[in-house]
Length: 616
Image 1: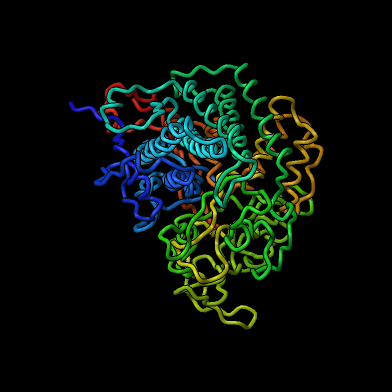
Image 2: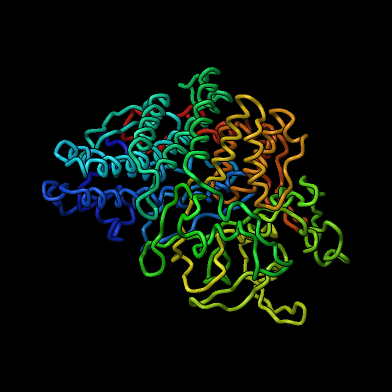
């Protein structure tokens, strides 16, 4: 049997530049460069190093900039699949073909596994070659070269962090692979060792990076610290809650405590030492009026290119840039989040019914009475108190609700051929129909892919001029609000509710125009954790965090049902049962949600790659 591990291809300078020039292949890892530019003609200046670094950014970006699909593996977002892309900077799309349902997904990410290692190889290419430049570099250029290495190591650390979060033990490759024979027979590296290498990458990046990135999309010290803190937080969770599906890992309580302390220290530095602030200082802005989108809360504008494209206020600690129309480097947010009335978009992603009840009352600061699903043809359904199809039921809720989702009779801007078609109301199951509202005729929002009664407003552009796959939004992979919440979580685990952590959670609540947490919500570690979890659900909705949270907390059974249970139905605003999840699911079925399958194809090529326990 011929053994070729990971299908890593030989890298060259010309292949590194392919991404930079917008001419990447559809499947990076299966390509062999046909032309080589001798490294002796290239690695000469800091500008050369930066050019290669941009290739690494372009290689890593498509591994993280559609993380919203992962939210489909949790309770509050439905994904119908993944859109197929062509001709843009996608590397064949690592997300395509994955399973983004709440169960049964662990065997569907062989492609992502392979593409992540492509990101590793591309960053190693930069790190190794720029290191060779250091001995002869001038004193003036050396800090810049070290910063380039730091950025590349941060990217490499992010990729390995994703690998261990999904697969546990993985082969660790810390050098350029020029030929597959170099990694034949390579075994999986224990997660502890990989974690230490990631920590070293993040630490080096923190030490060598400038305080602020040198250009839009470039990272600074806060990003390195935030990711180092997040790695330690995950490490703490795995040691506290255990990871029995990874049978080579033994949890350790003292390791958990040490990691929580380290995470808290890093997050505290990010929060206090760099002058970062929430977008628009965390002010809620204005709700506007029901059924009107001319005025929207501030939180909405954080997720549109017009207002948050530059990191002027520090909310976006790290983000990946996109080129926009005509660059073949656009983002897919409109295509994935919007319906057909918006440039023929496909609505691959939309909120589930259950998310609406997570938005708390701006009056009480706590959960409102649960919405009542009703068929709109039922007499009084549109006016009944708390009816899910009564627009008035959504009044006086967390402003992030208005900014994030749409319910019946909420408006958005229709678009076709890069021009506005005017306001179109969302009315569930009334697609592309003529309706009259308050004496004005409209064509309803065509969202025939929706089965919940809600669609997203978050990430939805409210102006024309860009195609469905041609946006230039800077997609966030680390936000200050997330750091606030991770800091609160880490300090709560160490010492229970702390005044500074409570204040930070209240700052995030304030952007939803919610009152501060009641004393009963901060009385002990357990209730404060619930308050933190609640904020993570609504603040980070659609950003790909929830499914990773559920796994690191071992909370899948808690939010769904125990093994061999009756399962949990997902319904819509009209009361129809849509999909039942975890019905009579065995313990093995749950275990396979906590750890992903090592790709069988890789194991066929390399028998030294062991398999994760639930997949044996």
